[in-house]
Length: 365
Image 1 (tube, rainbow, N blue to C red):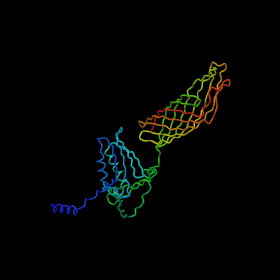
Image 2: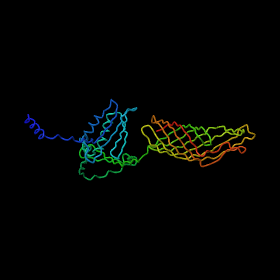
Image 3: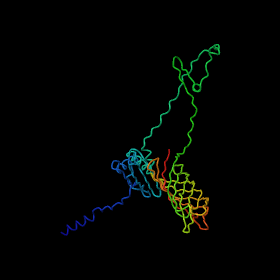
Image 4: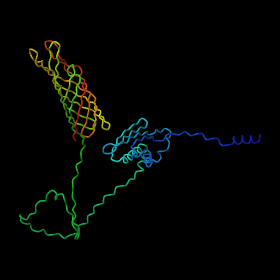
């Protein structure tokens, strides 16, 4: 028994040592893919990326940073939209793509991923065919002919008419024998198209209210026109501050209203159908006051108005032609004044105006 135990101990000592577990490194691509059930899933995305970058499944080498991709594929009216967010270390990129077919968007996403991982391998995986060379124009040599004696001139009535513009730009080269003549048209260079900016016009109806322009609450209605660009808008608007009756306990009072004209420019970042304009501009107008009819003497007065306007907004464009928005405006008057009856202040210009404005905008192509 002692011999058997000694042999077992020797076999255990001479046996191969167990291999230490290897450290599992993350792969080069970290993929989060969200799509409807009818569209390709993450396995299909991996397969399409692997066709362009075969070593995408290999673990990261020391010093490499993984590519983190978050994709959201959603159905929209008329097709699908794909939102891509790529992060690699401190670099961040976001893209939005749309198409009628979600499989086509999946292939586009795979191509974007492959280019971000290895642009050289991606270019090598795409077949390229050199363009065919344009055929050279060969003209048969003209045969040698004996000099011809010019024919006598025809009478003036039989003179040929001068060629028009199309005939003047065409020359005919005749070949030998009985071949049909061939025409070579000489055309000038085509005009180079200039760069254009995609601009649209928006017609807007406004309604809202708030504190100001006098030191109480007022309602406003109006309208405006805007020039819309990709990330900006320039707008003009006109508003009427609805008439309001202000009366003091002493019986003094008046009816106050105003009209305002404004001009502003906006920076408009957007995400899908949501727009977040940030606007700055100026406004000017006239504040009007008229005494109550119960006063012994009814008088009218006006105060000029000018202010700086600033404020953010929020707009939703359900279609290409329609947008609904809300603007929060802060206006700081640069003029001062007040309406007074018998040394009693009825209303004075507010130091700061705060308004909320709802708008419905029709966008023309």
